[in-house]
Image (cartoon, rainbow, N blue to C red):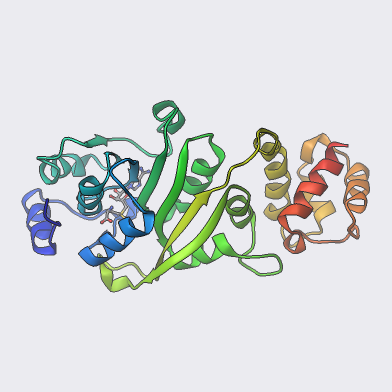
Length: 281
Ligand code: SAM
């Protein structure tokens, strides 16, 4: 079916008396070329089941539905549902789920098969959405999403930089990230105040052991970065991490090969894995 042109989008929004809601991070893409670039970047084929988060009026949903086997589109805003019913008319491979993506149990819906996540994400909840997808045992094979440019950079940041933190480490643990392209604010209505980027996160094949270890490793990482200006020993002992005392934490930090005043931002992912092993004893 044809792309949803900007004029058609405006006409539908007017007819339904739709008003953009800032609280839902509603910035709709108005450039069909970019919609196709996102779907190309995700490598969607007619064998793929796709999950789209926040379909809006359905412009990306249409391009996805033209290429995928099935699209599940999760939209929180009730006002967009009659609009989506209209823009998706004629498609028998689209399921609209009217819910908050943070409350939907994706692992319950997609317990098997491979799923691609493709979305122009609502920026106000990018981090919980991405962390939720990574940490649940949900059978996606890639996540291709438009995010705020700064967040895309944070996802790829390495040790010793100001952007480095729990999000960068989770992305590195679970996926191979790659920024595909940058997008300027004038590609959306209303225009966001920030630049955007499309990033691809390809799922790594983790061993069962790595999956099981993740919970403790990320408990340590979160505690360390929650107080990133403090020494690691202080940050971890203030959080009472893994039930350890301050002296046990000091010993573990030293056993992992660091000075007791080391700060979280210099540790690599492998360092955190080793430190967690030492903390567990
Ligand atoms: N996909 C459309 C596009 O590219 O034009 C809209 C993208 S817009 C940046 C984000 C969309 O996510 C909006 O439709 C918004 O209503 C929806 N949204 C916001 N919070 C949500 C949530 N918690 N769960 C599901 N959808 C949400």
